[in-house]
Image 1 (cartoon, rainbow, N blue to C red):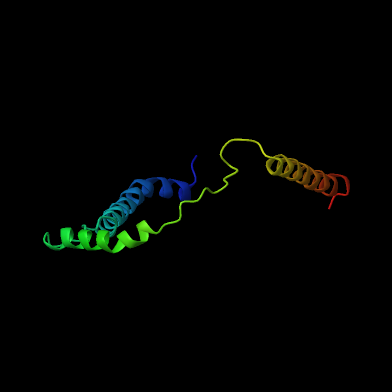
Image 2: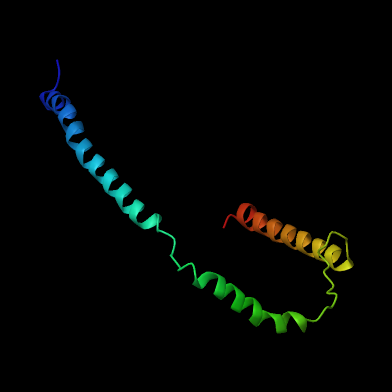
Length: 113
């Protein structure tokens, strides 16, 4: 013997599924249209006669700066070789994080905080 309340719910569930399908489709279509109008923006257009003149003007303006640029060698210690700074930093960081982990473990498990 079935309960009358559950039999009514079972008979209405296909109708409820169909009624929820239409708003879901409309919402999906609205999202697609909104994303399409926002996500794809056309590239800015520039007159063709202005682009070469602008590039030439920028190149001519940058010439004095390029001619007076300092040519100096900068020490860059992250180029693959080991240095004492890197070795010391490795040990400081690993030992520091190990100490933090051990203290956290001790506080959380042994002292039950």
